[in-house]
Image (cartoon, rainbow, N blue to C red; front, side, top):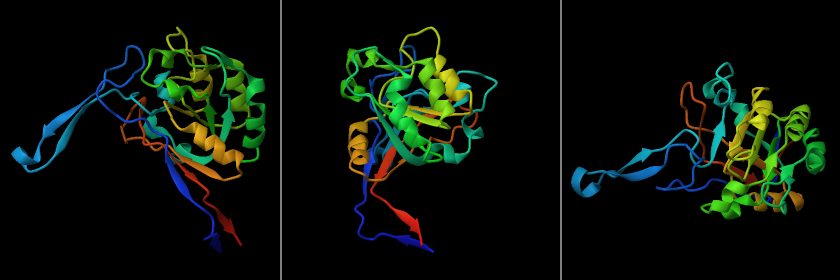
Length: 234
């Protein structure tokens, strides 16, 4: 029988950046434009017109993003986009610092005890969203990406523009993570609050469901975290 603890405090966090005209994008990606297509006064309804790339704002990458032979967004099982969260708190690193396997050790130990867990890299870089410094984020070394894969993780999220150095010629961390049919979520925000909740002992679930774009390399998501929810079998 499924029993819910009715006394547990449950709250929700929006982990997404707002989609607005002129928002930051990865260098070379389509710019984002949001404007009015229809108005109530003239047309009887309000409708927005959106122009954006598949990698705009808070989004997920499918393996197809880095290799045409790998699965596209709609080839992936839905369970890739939801699960218990494990936060690797790597805040305090300097600009362009590598995230090495030793920095992930405690989080990966917890991941091994939580099958299907989503690993969240809390770099603190979301504080620089909208500034040039946002491009100078820490990045995941190939060795760290391989350690993540070896721990059984298939979904990784980060509060930065990329898991690889922005502007780099290669994308080794992408290729290692996506090479196991994994998913990468980028441009998350408020991971400091998720880290604080986890440190206090609250369970956290993360939801990263993308737009249904057939054959896509990725898509924007409304990323959310549910904190404090418990459902136990009795």
